[in-house]
Image (cartoon, rainbow, N blue to C red; front, side):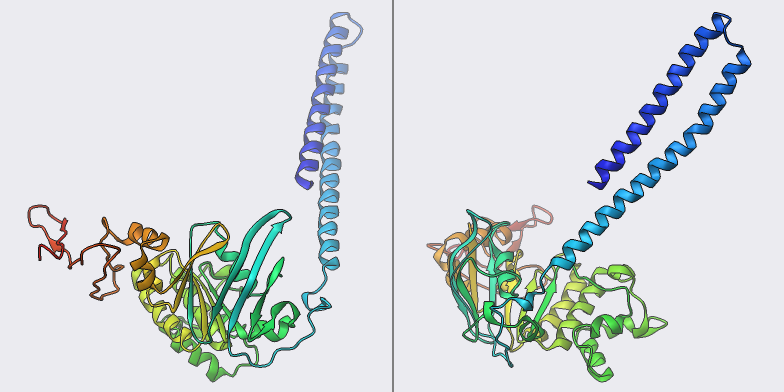
Length: 385
């Protein structure tokens, strides 16, 4: 609305001044030719017109500022009208220390009426296990994570933590036990120490430094002149992507959450940064109920359960080995990313020797260099070996 009003007012003032100028030029020229006006009088009118233009544009500027002020006032009014989440009359139960068991009981959810995003989703994550969510964009993975974080309330069904319906739990008692590490890390315009301690403002200096050591933040923070008091800038612009991610992991480690959400935390990093961050994530995931949104499927091979989500439903579930052996949708997704034909290759840097069999496929041996084609790989099947 503000942009529209500003554009309209600016255009209207320009058109008006243009029309007035054209009219003065037209009638002034006719009057001079008819001998009814001298050239000096005409120039006087033209000068007055130039002096008139500045106040007109100033008035337009004042109108623009007024319109922007009204828009800001409207946004502020909307914000003040928002009801705090914990004022929901249903949220009366204060949670103690949780174990981390998460259960979806036939959960359906829609952002707009009549357009369901999730339909009858049901699964259970045991305390301390890793659950990976796999599927194409728009399948409902992020919505499931939003429900676990209690950002949304199911349209039908229930999301339970340790048997407690999240829609009845006080969020201040639940979210302090929830940790999130996203692909796009948000850092405040403060120091490294302040950003790490944000998850637990009452943490001691020793606890903050211990979390930084585990997440390998100390490796770059100690090299700065002000060390942990170095200001990172708005959204952490003074740090590299890997450094920002390590600060985010240190923040999550300090929070000591019982439930952890990882949204493809290493997908945009180089291999060296990813290797360092994977170490921190491995420590962070230890003994915690973890949910991973995975686009690179090699990162979730060791998950306790993998849920393949498509069209708002769970169409497959199981471990990597069981889903790969079935030869269904997960098999398709995995082989598209990491295979040639039906061969299974490890992601670069994983460094394991793995031999698996797909449905009705022969075992695949390690690839062998074909000297006739520089840089090429010759596939050797079990029958040839």
